[in-house]
Structures are given as C-alpha cells and as structure tokens.
Image (cartoon, rainbow, N blue to C red; front, top):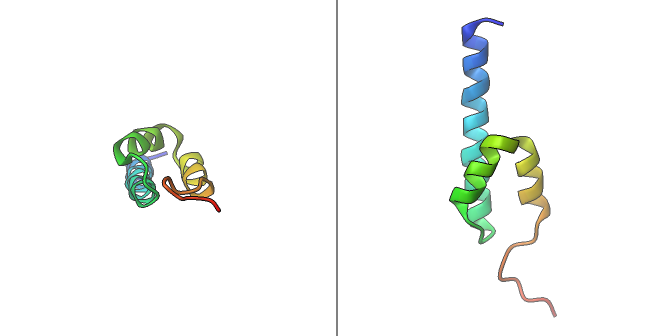
Length: 60
C-alpha cells in the first residue's frame, strides 16, 4: 500500500469521527467523548449512535 492510500484512510476515519461527534450531540450526548470513541471504533461507533435513543426523551 502506498502512502497516499493510507493517508486517505486516515482522513476518512477522522471525518467519520467528526460526523459521529455531531450525531452524538444531536442526540444529547457528549460530542467529545463520542469523538474519542469513534477514533477507536469508527463505523461501530456510528452504529451505536444511530441505534441509541436520544437522551431526555420522555416515554409515555
């Protein structure tokens, strides 16, 4: 693998982590925490954010 291909991977992973932070904040969760978690988990963190209910939602 050449340098430009691995550089694109890291740019994509970093972009995904920023998107995840925005999604988390929109659901009432800590953006910084989810950004850090997304750096480690990537697409798995996206799935978790999308699957979780927003905080502060009252049932009933």
